[in-house]
Each structure stands twice: as structure tokens, then as C-alpha cells.
Length: 69
Image (cartoon, rainbow, N blue to C red; front, side, top):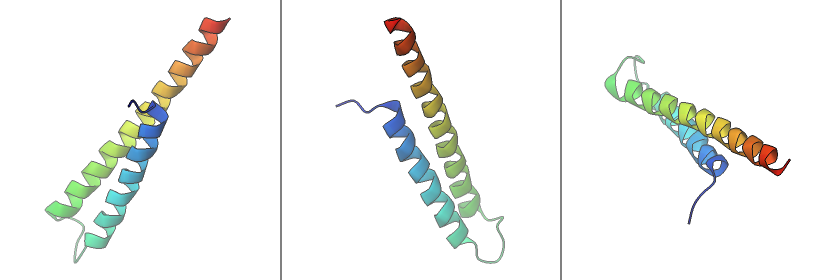
């Protein structure tokens, strides 16, 4: 079963929020520990992928709309 780019974008956006929350909770004394930076990196990558998938979804819809005309 294939998922649409928009569905996958929502999944990645949710994971980005989850990783951000876990990173905030893992801060003990300072933010500059390996685990916190790693979680922030994963959250950033998830947000970037979500944005790219939303843009892909819009491009596909635009191409389909143009094809119908």
C-alpha cells in the first residue's frame, strides 16, 4: 500500500515534534550533551523532510490540475 506524500509529511512532522519534546526533556545541566544534540538533529531532519514532502504534494497536485486542462 502506498502512502501519499502528505500523509508521510504528517508522520515526519509528528516525529519531529516527538524528538523535540524528548530533547527538551533530556536536558539536565546543559543543552550541549551528545544525546540532546542528536535528538535535535533528528527533529531537524524530520521537519525538513516534512516540508519537502508537502512541497512535493503541491507539485503533484499542480501537475495533475494542469494535465486535466
